[in-house]
Length: 591
Image 1 (cartoon, rainbow, N blue to C red):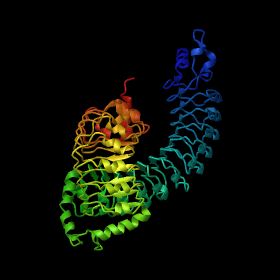
Image 2: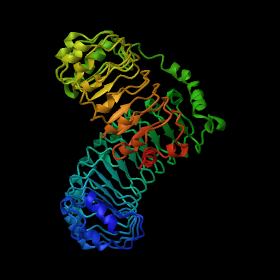
Image 3: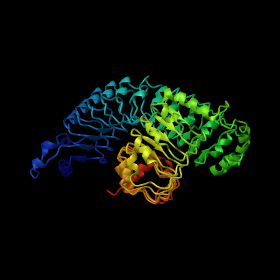
Image 4: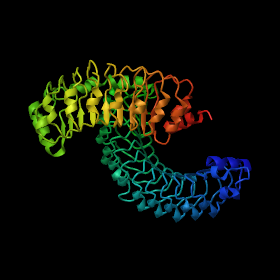
């Protein structure tokens, strides 16, 4: 023990985990008072990290408060029934984990630890959280799964920087009114296995939310406000009482996983077939038929339908491969297309021609600041794009546009420009450079011939860039570094053999999608992206993942690796999801 304490005085870190301790040695609380004669007092450092996990400790002394320099305190998996009030004196504490104990309540003084960033208290006996927790305004992660919570304190709304909130396995019936709308930065919300009777209306305010888990509750309907969760990638609503899926769910265009198994669904709307899902779980519902449009969801890798009274589909198809089922459904689509062939050539059910449609869209844009001219068969950009004034978002997707006019420089307020599936062959650098406020640019599916040198300097303000489906080589690194504010980068289907070497320098990146390429390795430097929340490397030729990728665990919530020849990772690990995979990789880091 003396040798361990001596090492701690030199390093500032003391690890006493897995030692069958029944109490904390008194020398720990007075670490600096027992400096040995062979130690140089001026080289001794104060304790910053104390690890006492996986022991049999029943109590912590009030002297814990004397260790005022501690930033990390891990006391999980012991036999504690309470925390001493002196924990409030740990004025530098950032990470506290007391999971796996028998603690029934937290001391009010926990609110004095205002520097807390991560608070983990899963698998205890907490029936409530103290209102003083609202003082912990720096809190980014709160995990209190598998407790006895029946409500949450209103004061929790002051923790507005929360990124992750885990409330699984409690007894919550509802959320306090106005609470969720305070968490604008929240990316992961887990309230599964509670007693919620309805989906909170305020979920619509969580535009940064990536993962939402509300499975095994008593929810009867999906609220239309869910469409506001525009960043949502994973949605789990299984084992509830939901009877239908609203058409508005089609607005969740980032959604990759939709799990609504074991509900009371009677139909799945054709509109929802526009989603680009990888996984759709509709098993154990009351579906008697499926929309044929489901067959067009070519992104689907897993479609689960077992346990439904489907009358028009053979059971061998239902239990067979997803690809066979989708192929069968696609074979039924032409019959549906015939029923829509009588629509006016303009594609508008009211019979309005394209010119009138543009006028109507421009009129609406004067108040919404959003002008959508998507799929109008346009060969040129109409003047209304810059004449409306103060347009913030312009959608010209699915047209036949080859060139952007210089007059577009008049769109001085433009922040988002969507040009998906046009016929643009030349990089429109002159126009892009004139849009000084441009933050979101989508060029997916255009036949660009090249990226000229300095192309990305002309769009240096971008936060979101989508170049998916463009097959010409990217500019030579470090070209991407010319866009230092990038938050989202989509490079799907670009015939890439490797991830560009300047990607790890995009330190603000939150979403990186390099799926459906020919990439053979994931560079270890990817761990420099410490704000990365979503990484999609699916459908490449990657055979192994660097163990240090596991170090992104605190921020990386979605990691897609399907479609790679990963030989060193068992399928059971991959099937358990992102969290399990990152923990597996972290364990492989050489000590």
